[in-house]
Length: 473
Image 1 (tube, rainbow, N blue to C red):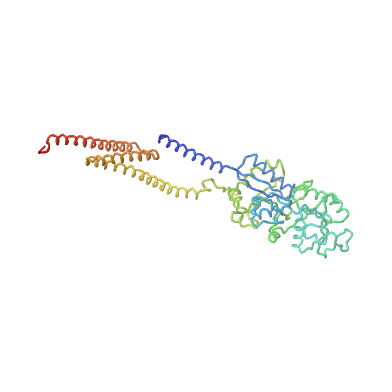
Image 2: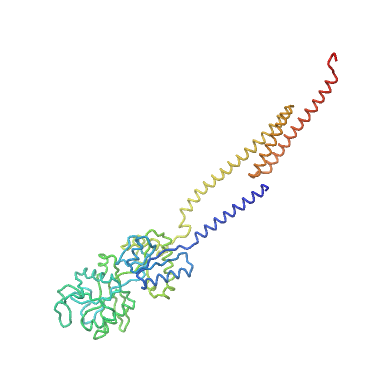
C-alpha cells in the first residue's frame, strides 16, 4: 500500500480517537450525580417528602439524582450517614446527631405544644409541678425530650402507674411534690382523660401547623367548660438550647390554631426538635449547593404531593463563619446557596485552569522539541544515505577496477532499498526525495560510465600491443 495511504489512515485514526476521547469526557462530565439518602422512619411525612424530591429530580432531568434508602427509625438513618452508608440523611438531632453530618436544610420544626384548660392554672411549663401531663407521643424520643425539659426546671418525671399523693377535689397533686406524672395517651383519649381528671394538661410534639397538634388543642377545648385552651409557654427557650443544643427554640404564632377569637391570642415561646436534611461533611460544596438549590426550587412541586414541603426553611445564621461553627453546623455548600455565592465553572476550577495552562505550555514545548528531535534523527538518516551516494560517485570516478565498481553498484541497490523502506514508514518531503533520486541516478551513471570506459580502454590497449609484436617474433 502506498505510503500516503498509510499516512491518511493514521491521520483519520488519530482524529477518531481524539473525537472518541472528547465524547467520552463530555458524557462522563454530563452524567448526573447519584446520592444515597437515608430516610426514617418509614411512611412518615419526612419519607414522603424525600421520595417526592427524588421523583421530581428524575422528572426534571437534573444533574443530581437521589437513591432513597428507607429505615425503620430516624436513629437508623443518622447511623447510616455516620457509618458512610449514605451521602444524605434525614436526621432529628435530639434523637441522634451524626458526627460527620452537616445541615443542608430544615425540613420542618416540631414544637412541644402543651395545652391546658383555662381553669387549670397552668400558664408556663414550671406550673406543671405536681400535675399530670398526658403525652401524645409519635416517636420514642418524645418522652425523653419532655423529661429533659422537666429536669431543666428541677421537676421529676414520674411514671403513669405511680401512686399519686393525696389530691384535692380537682385531682391535682400537691405542688410541693415537685414531680410531674407523664401519662401516655392517644389523641382520641385526651378529652375523656381531662373529663375524668386523669390528666391536667395534654402535650404533643409536632409542627404547630400540623393536624396532630390541632387535634390535641381541640380535644382540650372539648373538655373545658368554656371550650377554651391555654397554650403553655416555655419562656426560657434560648437558655434551654444553650444547655441542650440539639433542641430548637420555637415560636407558635398567634392564631396558629385558628378560631374566633384566635388561638393563641398572642405568640407563645416554646422549644422543640427539628427534622433536618444532613449531608456528610466530605460531600463537595458544589454538590451540596446543588442539592439545596433544587430542594427549594422544586418546593411548589413537592408541596403538591406533601404539604410538609411548605415548612422547609434555611437554618438560622448571620454569617458564613457563624454557620459553619454553629452548634448544628451548616454545610459550606448550603451556605453558598443561601448567600448566593455559588461559583461559576471558571471560578470553581480556576486553579486547575491555571495549572493546565502553565503545565500545558511546558508540555506543548516538550512535545514540539521531541518532534523536532525525531525529525532531525530521520533527516540524519537521509543525510547519511546522501553522503554515501556522493562518496560512491567520487569513488566510482576514481577507480577502474571492475570488481570494485560491481561492489559499489550492489551497495547502491542496498541504499535504494533502505531509502524506500524509510519512505514507507515515515513522511519525507518532496525536496529530500528529489535529492535522493538525483544522487542515486548520478551514482549509478558514474558506475556505468566507469565500467564502459574501462572496457574500451582495455580493448584499445590490446590493439596497441598487437601493433607492436615482440622482437624476435
